[in-house]
Image 1 (cartoon, rainbow, N blue to C red):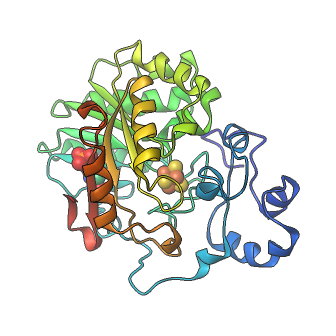
Image 2 (cartoon, rainbow, N blue to C red):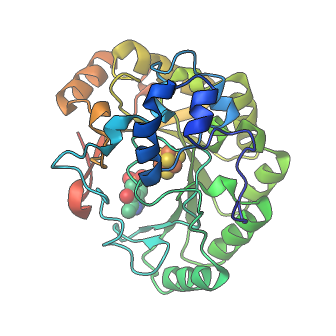
Length: 322
Ligand SMILES: *Cc1c(COP(=O)(O)O)cnc(C)c1O
Ligand code: SF4
């Protein structure tokens, strides 16, 4: 295990683990071994516990499928053109006033529909000190950058000490007004949401956390408790959801999710149209259906519960509301 970040010890990390847990049949072994060569697998205990059957909305998101090796013609290894828009390692700069900083490429769980699936994995992709210095230098040299978004991989699996060191360096850049962290940790590994981590995030520069969650069942009591540690320190939490066939593509399921978010004091921010990453076609929902679901939800649930339905156009053209 590379150092620099923590993932739960008892996670399922390979095909043997999936078979032992009864999540896939022995007959699927050969096909899934081929998938595992290409795409990382991890299902942490907190999410394993939520899977009742392999094809339920939790299982579908995280259990690999042989269909992942069927690449549709329109699918791309870098659907949002992160690579093309990366001036220095770890930075993606597409919109003038915002830059992404990816301090690592490991996650606590690997989502089968991930738009960065060709990049993320347990090898870590952790930026070294020298690379971080170059990244800080790039941000410091671009006064138009007002917001730095830490993403990855998942920044919250870094040790609190390491994370704080990054946040301190970014806060010290005068034109950086706001920081944001994109994460799945509060859902994937609620045990990581310690007071120590919350203290590391409690800095004077306004910090927003954007939580990736796709189904109401992911938001357990343990998740709410973890989020409260941040909220009590004045850190607002936004919700990001990917619209996924079989997982959340109905009025009832999305409505339940958005209300569950509000109960956890999470403001639904974006509902993402799926990006065309390789082998993800089984999750595709037509944009017309997405629009219809949101239109039907308007009036049925609180306006505060409704996110913006957004599509990140291929080739680095940026996000547009649908
Ligand atoms: C999505 C994204 C952002 C953040 O966009 P918001 O609309 O502010 O959430 C910033 N940079 C890149 C490259 C992105 O893809
Ligand atoms: S947590 Fe985010 S970056 Fe990691 S695999 Fe899931 S979608 Fe991709």
